[in-house]
Image 1 (tube, helix red, strand yellow):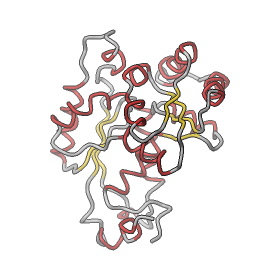
Image 2 (image 1 turned 180 degrees about the vertical axis):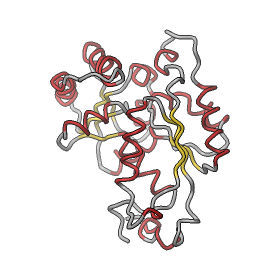
Image 3 (image 1 turned 30 degrees about the vertical axis):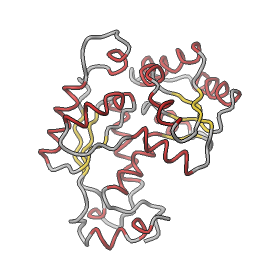
Image 4 (image 1 turned 90 degrees about the horizontal axis):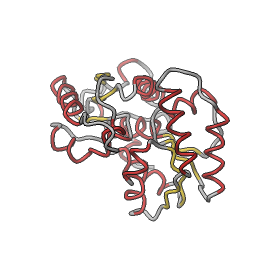
Length: 252
């Protein structure tokens, strides 16, 4: 275990005064943002309120759809609104920014130039997690924007991890789950989800990447078995570590 994490309580001070303050650009979508904050709280080793991270969240669901813009189906560029939101968080005191939306990482370079605080690169964090776990073939459940942009393919290739995407028919089902069920606050079809997973595993996936934060809600509600990498869980754990608190599994 990283020695920095083992003694994180000692360097954070009795009231966490040396910790970094976290800013969260939320609302993409709102349910995923709410789940992320719950995971952040659940996974922080805390004996009292003061042991948790100081966190600023702006939920801005009016940010234009990222996938539609990436695919050329909309001319509404989400980047200005994301940058504006990030800098509002910096004005509030945020030292580091988290974005619980994988598709928005397509714009990471632009966002990094425009937002006056470092942004956690969730795609890279997932790649590092897979590498540490010894996973060499990962099945990808994500939006069309993420799949067609090659975000994960590019990042994981550098770690010698093969990305396995769904067939076109199954990818349409992923989008239906995300947009017509979860984002629409309607019931989702678990059998559809499992059929996508089965195809990815049949094609060699050792683990399934829930690489759209809406899909994390399926994992939460259905108590899925092992064999998934949940983007929101990875982000929550890294936020805790980067900001200088202890995760629940740290030796304290």
